[in-house]
Image (cartoon, rainbow, N blue to C red; front, side, top):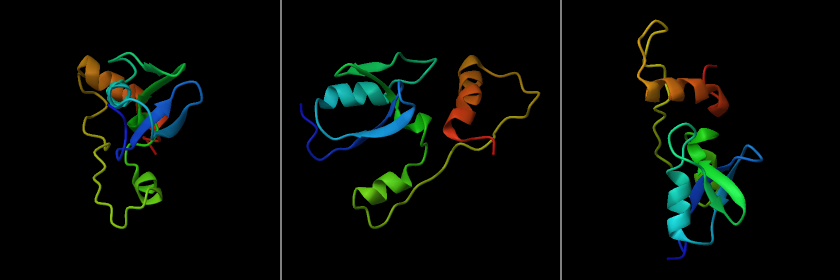
Length: 106
């Protein structure tokens, strides 16, 4: 199934940059967006390794506007929700460790 009208924001692991998948397989694009370091292995698409675009841009308002969106409604859910002394579940721990990669902890 091809990507026709859908754009998927991804993170290129080798470059550490966000990118937009505009062509190719919908299945591959969805597989890449489900990939998250520490949880699910990266997806290889045309020899490049991708993970979810939220790793480097959790609220891609700029990307949506660049694609022609006149109005963007977005919610940033990447706020601190646990204290420093909390006993963190492994998934939460992974999320907190990766937060600085996405521009968190400012």
